[in-house]
Image (tube, rainbow, N blue to C red):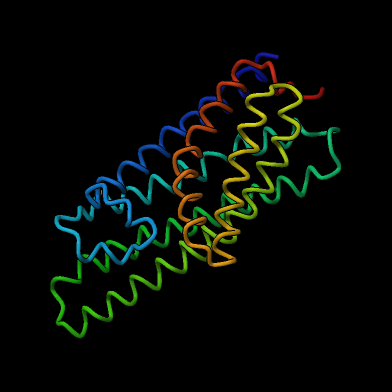
Length: 233
């Protein structure tokens, strides 16, 4: 029993830390581009922004790897165990959650390596080389942002969150619906990108970036309180 409590508490605090680090990532990237939020939908604007902080940009992506993604893994598998006996779709739901975490972390890792490299080389390059750097920067950003994050990741994230939210709602109405809403917003982001509805995709991703770190903080405290996520013995 004591080991179970230690495990539960550890998972709860790691999940809360995930949300905190997610917010740190969000504010680091916003601060790096002088809080010009158009950057989130058009990253190539960074070359026209004054005093971009390359170090903050790099660390924002490193924080993104952990805050929005890897630190969610303990809660993901904790909820997987909790779903035992509740639904035959448990493995598929967890697969979608795992896919979201791994693909998202890979995308952030790519940008953590490439963005600082491009921005460091840009002022030292010839005009022709600068055009190439801009093209590469835009290509990598588009590949990760529109391909991995805001298309594939949004779909599997929405399946995971809506899937677990349906069962959380049976125990806690507010937390369950909050989980479902975050999942729906994630879906709208992906849906907007699939249909190339920029206004829908941009609105959804900006909402998601704020709500996504709040969600693990709420889930973490729910795990610590041991009122919703009671594991089957």
